Image (tube, rainbow, N blue to C red; front, side):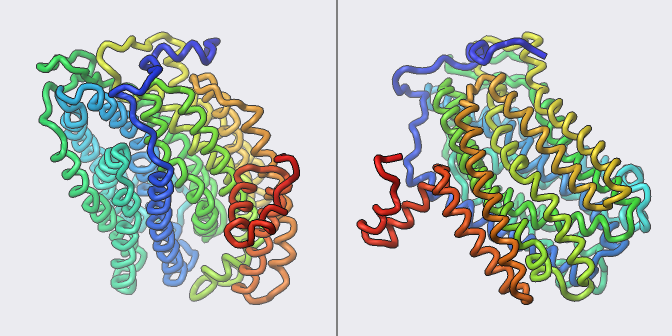
Length: 579
């Protein structure tokens, strides 16, 4: 693909500054990061809890049958639009773009405001494209359903639900754009609350209309929730724009810019969005593959896969919260040319995300049956559904660490070639660099090849478990390739240090799962089983991680000991000679 060394990529970035200059963003205080993470974690947890309640009601009202299978095929629309327009692609594109605009604003405070230039040049075109996409999905719903699930028992219901959920595409895109702008300004509260608003809309319609409209009520709730999501961000975004200076000349797609103030200008690079969109869609294609292969399995299989994925992804979501808060910091460091600060932040994020997701993985491996029984086993969701879903969760869990690490790595990767650049900066148009733009999508395609191969070979014998195994194998392949790609891109990760830390965390998680599984099997009651198994996993992970020297575990454990115990007791937990 390319033989460029990582150091050869640095000239495409602004030259690093040896001293803090007007354009170099000051590092946020430690308290700011803690507060931002706390707010994001609380509101994201609330959104996840409401999403879980949504899934519980779907299971209670409709169970796992051909009706829920039809809705879940339609659910592919918001399930694809959310990562493309809110969580991943839009964030990857617009957070670095707004970060660069903010750096330019700080460098020349008396010039035209690059932030308002960026908004005026991008938002109208985005609204037009989103409207066309929403209409296209609605009109093409029959073909989309045939493509995604050709063996579906009730395709007419799936087409109806798909057309309803297509209305969410435009509000999703607006919400993603506004959330990216606010996060780049270090405003995290409103963006963190969007899934609370979204799920409130779904739950309101589902609770009040499920008897009247059946599973269609969930699709209508998706459309309403998407409007609430975008509406939550409009006022905070407008307040940020009103606080900005009057805008001067607009950046023009293709590269020319004239500023009446002679200040720094932005140049749009529209084609930069293609590799980002390609990566996001190929990543989401894992879901398409599951829906396609699962449609030929017994009714309810797609529903089991969906419920298992929702529970499994809670651990990954908790890990991704870390880089949601730190991503604007990485983007600003890269916009200012500080590759060392960006590398250090990414390495720290990789370690912290791995610690969180591996702890969650150990918990799910140990407690999956009791967790599913506690959450879902009521109404139309029976014991057989519980056993099938729990088995899928355990297989899915092996791919969770790779899912979380990809979420951490892909953000700085695309930040190195944002959708805008400084006017006057050298273009990076050499063929090798353009190929590197497509590296994540290529890595994802190779992962999909593994997913399809394992799924096709394993599904005839193992059913849904074969699909889950293909998912885990494919995403792990992609994560390994992307780790190398980040180094090629120009962020010179110290791989030996990173992988060594992850090996210690992995060993701690394996030991915790091994100890927690028999503990969770002792009580017959699902609640007691979950509590006992979870407590065992937590204590084992903390003890093993500390003993193995995993900094992400050892530091919090020793801090907790110092807070809970007298100094003399806490000091006994420290290894001699500072080792």
